[in-house]
Length: 489
Image (cartoon, rainbow, N blue to C red; front, side, top):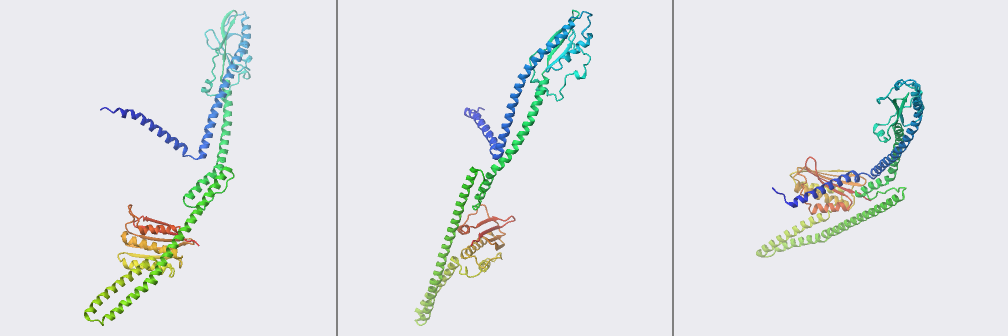
């Protein structure tokens, strides 16, 4: 099966894009999601490490060059010091013993002569190239061995190209061996290792101290930014009264002043919106109250007068002939029925526009009458009503809002909840909050719930007063409608 050419040409690009996206995602997750303090400290640590590596490389380079020069000079001096005793042996004419049987005071004096020379080692070999073991020199004459030997990899960095210098030894005109002057860089490498170790300890201690001080300093410098982040979260939650303290850093102080100015403007705008919303609600309530007064004071008496006149027409109809009286009675009955329906509609409109008890009777009693009215018409389930620390009234605006919320909540529960029990609880939480809870054990709120006009109007009215509305499902089934209304002077 052949693969189209455009697919083959696309795959490398797709692979490269995938690699780039993964790389950018990892770098973004490892770097940009960290705090500013972490990024600055990480940058300081990286710079310190790079500076330490650069300083180590420079010191090592200079130490190697100095070691090569010192080793070459030490070998020249050691060769000059060794040739004197060797030439003295060459002038001896008595005997021709092997080199290990030569006068030991002459050979053993060689290490003593060069005991103050560094970077060289002396070896005595026989005619076969084997190292000859001489009698040990006094302890004070031995070269000092470094206890803290440098590691092998570090000593290997100081190896030089100078070969061992061989000085032949003749005794009685016969070649009996040689003295080798060998360049030795381990001493210098050990000294450099010790120096670098001490410098590294000091540098690490200084870096840790600087890192600690930088951590504390960044904490003080960046603390206003953390406060700014918390302040922005407060603004996001609608707490516009939050203010930032002014830090000592001038730039951050300017930011804090700008934030406080912004928060003040938002707080003022929120307060102004609240005043406008309350004014709008008051205007609406005044219009409803005016309409209710017109319906009650104008339309009510008119309907009563119409009904009375129709009743008097019935008395007059008794004096008419039977045929006319029968028609008049039918018409009068029809008129009375129409008047009754108009009066019923007028009373329903009055109750809907503005319950007459609002502002006159205690709020708890008004709500109790409303709940009792629902209980009389809905006999399939029980409605429980409870009040806690409710004042006589909170003003027509809040009283009417509570009334409408109970009315809408019970209407939705009766029509849609399919519940057995409905609990209505009205209480004053504290001096600044009023809470209303309507809870049922029905089927709960479905995901495709469509908010009708009544629920939308209720939410708008509560939010215009600065309150909140929460419609949720209960954990063990049913619906919970929680309404909170702030109380303001």
